[in-house]
Image 1 (tube, rainbow, N blue to C red):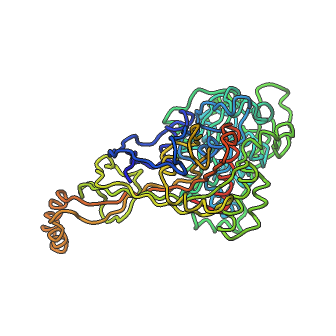
Image 2 (cartoon, rainbow, N blue to C red):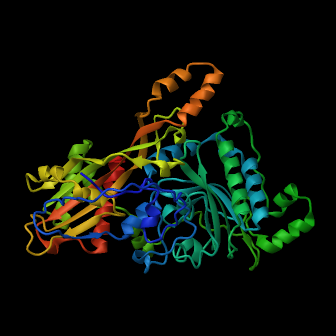
Image 3 (spheres, helix red, strand yellow):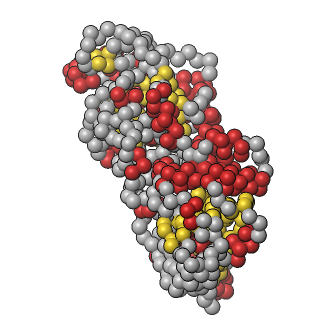
Length: 553
């Protein structure tokens, strides 16, 4: 089957282009292209072509994209679905299950007891940025656990209102110059009330395996200008020092060793110990205020106005009851569906129950979960391919614009589960044009059959909820120089140079592989079509819940 041209980039990483510029795209824009004429049969259609429309950005699609940690989230325009909200509860990470497993491994590491190390990092950072506070935290399932801090008396912060919970979803850094004006934070209790954060900057703490476990953050009670690239780099360097310290297995010598926890009535003692220049200390106090806490140097709170007397605020920051509806806005999927699916371990049974739930709740006559796999034969000069790699990610391939299509795509579809009328499965497998159309869209498609058509299902909805990374796989060398190249690789160094010369003239056939998992819902009646963004968002949110529970990736 001939299909239209398609960009040779990872679908997940180009999605920022596809959500109406709500999330900025930092991915490489280089693409390759190849032309085919379009001849797409349409599922269940025997009459006139239906009205097909691309699904636009819904609340659930936005939250799903926000959770993937593929973009810097410091500046994100407010989508239409959040226009009436005065804050945003951050969603769970796209890879939350694995992330939480890693957090548990780091939660009680002996290195956290080294107060002197963390104190020096935080004091140095506060002095560099002239802010009132800094913290090192781990983001657990329900709360931000504050391991070390200055200018803050809390030991925990509910994840729903945690700014660090946004940072773990942001690539590189998360900086808000004025939290009182950003749509995601202006109604946040930590902004409107204690600790009155008006400026925030955080750097994710990332393990060597790429798992984000927590955040190094700085904050102040007044807005700050945008951080320069150098300042972000400085904060990133401090975060790397923390991760190096946590990964130091030799720190076990701290066991049994008494680590002094200096008590102080204010920040003066710490500043004098780290910098004997009283003039610099005085200037800093003028900037950030005087200390008001009687606890440890890590618990110091600063204020510029007031009596300066000591006080101890609540140790835990929580989301108020009046804002519980905001928490629901960030949840993907219903608790009712979660309770049903948690009863089943077998994936096939769970897939059937999931489809059954959607069919009953949203009044569809047939629902299925399908996997689509697409293979595109291509060719490229061997000199552009990485050495000693049989398969590699197309997203990071520098020369993907050099790929040339040599044949049509092959599309394979298999159903993972279904519910509704009988004998519909075979029709799905016999006709894959609509599935490809949904795969090639931003967020999916829905269709309405035209009047007078003989279409069995007069409305339908197809939404990918998980996309696999595009992969380039080597096949073989297409030129006649294959044997000569192979022989030259077994000779001495001189012949190896000749091998590289020959290699540069060889054409290699490769296979570009991609795919996705999608939910497909069909109805006999046009009026049952889910045209509302809210309904489509609810359906997609439940798809994400199913994906996360059973790791469908």
